[in-house]
Length: 84
Image (cartoon, rainbow, N blue to C red):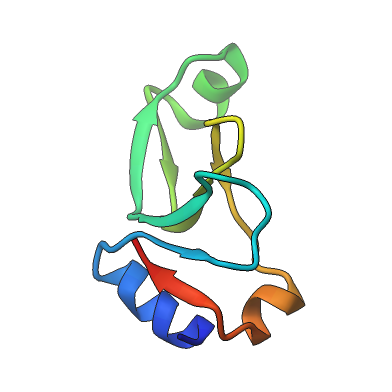
């Protein structure tokens, strides 16, 4: 499927990945806007008790860690997206 198809599925709560990715166990999922408790002094100083964040797409990396994801040109133009 296309990236557009994959993006629509992400917004519906599905998990997607690409067959072209070399890493095993990598996938994307959608994180809706919310907030989290302030932990650092800098966050407490600027935001108070909670830090708001906007929605984003997260990736589970090869080593099992989760980070925000940004699509590359190859990802956007690929047709090898699939639903997990």
